[in-house]
Image (cartoon, rainbow, N blue to C red):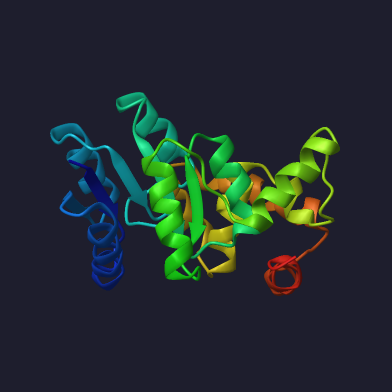
Length: 212
C-alpha cells in the first residue's frame, strides 16, 4: 500500500491531487500538511513513500527543504508540484535531489504520469526541461538558454523571487533566517548579474525571460 504525503497550503489543491492519487493507486494512505513544520512532523512520525511538495509553503526554506528531507529519509520519493516557472527552477530542484518537478499549470495526464514515474522510482520532468538538460550536457553545463536568471545561485534566485513579490529585505531575512545585511548583499548581487538597478526593471526582466 502506498503512503503519500501531500504538502500544499491550499486545501483545494490538496483535494484535487488526492483525487488523482486515489484514482491512480487505488486505496493509498494519504496524509496532508499545509506548513513546513507539519511536513517535518509527518515525515518524522509516519511511514511516507512519496511526498508531493509545493515549493512555497509557510515556514518553508525553498530548495534547502530537500536536503533536510533527504537527511531524514534518504529513500523518500519527492515530486515538486509548484506554480514556479520550470524553466527557472526545475533543473535546480532536480539537481538538489527531487525525483520529479511539475508545474501546477500542467494537465491531469501529465500530473498522473509524474506521480506514476516518481512512485516507480523514475525521474520526471517535462519535455521542455529535458530539452534544457540535454542542451546543458552538450555544452558542459554552460549557460545556453540566454536566460540571465540562470546566472543566479540557488539562494539568489530565492531572494529574487521574494523581491519580485514585493517583500521587504527585513521580511526576506526573517523568512530565510538570515541577517538583513546578508539579504542586502544578495540583492546587490542579483541586480549586478541581471544588469538592473531597481525593482521595476527587475520585474520587467523577469516577465521577459520567465517563459523562455
